[in-house]
Length: 340
Image (cartoon, rainbow, N blue to C red; front, side, top):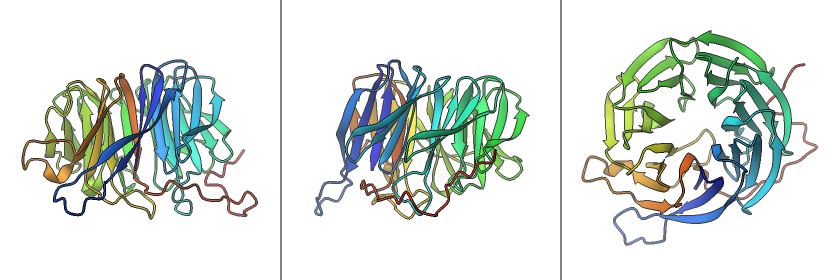
């Protein structure tokens, strides 16, 4: 299991989450081991993403970088016309630990589609009139949702490589995210979360948080995890809008990233599917066992201090960190088949 964090100090941090061999122990013990850290960009990092053995980062220097976690090395760097604010991978089931495509939403309202191996830009699509705040890719890899500073919700057809939908929202949304099964998605508007059907965007649930939400993630059993200025991690029932459980005062400063280390869309799964990681602007990354929440005072099962101002967090639950051999001459079609 891997965790990748970006910081205001232009550094990227990589960690491995391991479970020490202690069969006699009755409690879950985990070690958050540093894997790498170095100055990756010329300006503060805006977004990170990870899938299997590959991670990506973007910053205000208008570059997107790709990394191989198995060797802790950089795979390549591409310069965009505007800085990427949100990154997302797509990994087909046939490539369980190596993603096929990387998607980047940018400050100028454009949406870029990359091939990961080799790392090349396939196409850039104009989606919003102003900058994009967030993007989320459907588990099928065929669609992506975006929300922008123009107070609009957009949809990109990844098969044809073009915008297929755009509608105006009541106010600007900062986050949009598909639920794990792809049947619903949710959006964050400061201190409010709205849940919608993926097929027709019908509103099915709405709830308010105590303070502004800065990060969110979807979990198992229809749960939505939020974190932000209240310094806590809260799990919400997506349908009822009620709090399932919460970790009050999870950090001393506002939370900038949440990762649910549970089953992903592929065949690989983690050894322990009850883990949630959170990162704060004070530089601390913590991992929680949600089974122990509300039973006693919540204590993280592992933590690390980057001693920097964390701006973003991403994680991968795939156990294997060995890059598969990819046949360049394979007749298998690319996940993104774009029409001119």
